[in-house]
Length: 453
Image 1 (cartoon, rainbow, N blue to C red):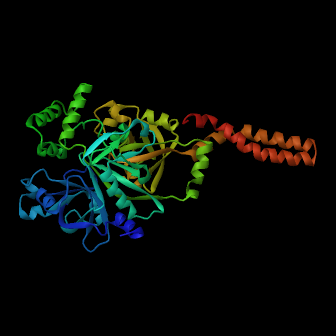
Image 2 (spheres, rainbow, N blue to C red):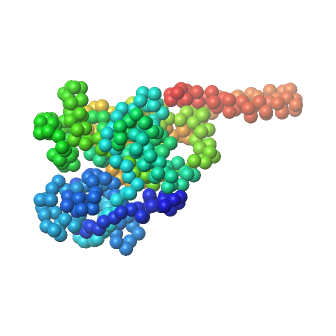
Image 3 (cartoon, rainbow, N blue to C red):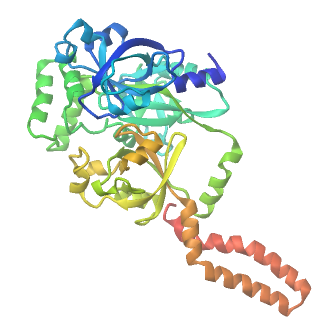
């Protein structure tokens, strides 16, 4: 499969291995919102792994939805105890809505497994000279497989790949030109910077041990002492917070031995034009006002933010973007984008009312986005990375209004000088004003550029 056909396969799931299952009810959990629960027996039979991303479609219908596949803790679960139960699944109302399924219906669907998938088993620390570039590095075997996937796609566009942490479901996207090969890495290994590991929930232990994490620990081929040490940490309090850095290192090492570092890499339907002219407007506004962007994990905002065109940002992110409270930002997720006013996360308690956050440091990499805006962006789940940019158009207009009189007075002074000394000088004066106005504008925006340079 090559060119446009391969791109359509990424977007629609056509040409991927699939299996049938009957939707027979609503999933007990609403997190993630694009979840499908299946039995362990059905997953083993068809070769699915826990929390991998799959595409679900109704039989004989063109509608489909991408889902996080969650395997039941055991075949003895009440919902999947019978033979009929093994071939049934549950899903969330969001997926039912996309597929046109009523809550009382029993509908046969196909679950398609992505074939263009890489499985990373180990995560290493990125080289310090590569951190600023925002690149990731793959071992030689993984990069060779990724190159084969990329060769099957059109070379005229910039393609993105999705990193899915199988233990927590956190998602992040990276373009192919930011992926490099590192021949010194052991097989099935990937290098990530600390911030990239934070976005994927790899840098610190999770604050809760959900059913997926508990099953990961229970089924790991490690000694009983390691398992008991992990369980004991999470039984100590409702939300686990390491008492020291040494305890954090210990629990992180134990989780790695249980397979916590497993990351799935799949080709994404997101792409962007590589044409030079498409980036010219952004380059010009960035040159005058200054560009700045940051990847943040999506989460819920304050309760009273729902239904409003606002997002909640940590103070550190607002400083990085060079914006003040109520300035506008642009959120990008794939091909979708949205504009919103930025408000600070000024209360740990208020953000904890709507999110599972145990540590104050956990606020730094998040952005609180209202549900309707997450839906418009195509952000189905929490912990999915979103690119947040300063709105250079808004900042240009905001500062131009403040500096309008100085610019106008400069223009009038030059024109008046031309009238005083005749038509020839007037012509030169007009030329000076044409050249001088962009220069004055550049000087006017020096303060804005200084915030991000």
